[in-house]
Structure formats: C-alpha cells, structure tokens
View (cartoon, rainbow, N blue to C red):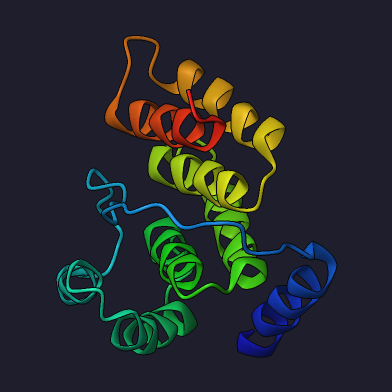
Length: 153
C-alpha cells in the first residue's frame, strides 16, 4: 500500500510541471472539525515556527499510516513552503479526493496556483470556496487576498 501511494505521488509529480513565481506568507490551517485525524499539534507547532523540514519528517511518517485529508493537506502546505510545488499539488489533490469539502485544502491549492501564476485555476478554487461557505469564511478571504496581491490590485 505504501508503495502504491508513493507511485501515485511520483506519477502526479512528474505530470504536474510548475515553476516557482513567488511566495505569500500564510499560516497553516487544516480542518479542525475532523475527528479521525491523528494529533497534528506537534506538526502545526513546527509549521508555525517555519520548521518545514521537521514538519515534513513528522508528516511523512503520519502519511504512511493515515490516509487522512488533514495530513495530506499539511503535507501539501509544507512542501509548497519549501518550494516543491509539484509534490505539493499531489498532496492537495489527494486531500481533496478524500474530502472534497476541505476548505483549507481548497485555499492552499488556490494559493499554489497563485504562486505558480495560474490565476484562472486559483479562481476555480475561489468558486469552490464560495459554494462551501456562501456566507464567507477565512479560507475564501485569504485566497481572494492572495489573488488580489498577485494581480497588484
């Protein structure tokens, strides 16, 4: 099973092909309402401290044992922050396969597209977030701010 996941990740990473554009400061969040997630307190602390290498090491171990959207979302976030956009895309995609209504994964995937200059794809994530939170939510606001900053508006 572990090798099947790694094979899928490798395949997606090869087919993605993104280039780095710019990075936006952000704080890692995940779906705090989830009850089946492993304890991610230590990972969140490492991410908040910008210890992405330490967070990745811990997340890799968790990802092997837990097919859980929050784990994959934070893997995607941490990889994006280290500049590994291809693999980051793979983990966001997996998080959304497991939980299509994962607002944080939608926000972060949109931010990945902003950072790689794919604004139309980022706008698709805005549209998804508008459906998920019609009254507005932090994830939607943060993604819209990232798009606005990128467009220089």
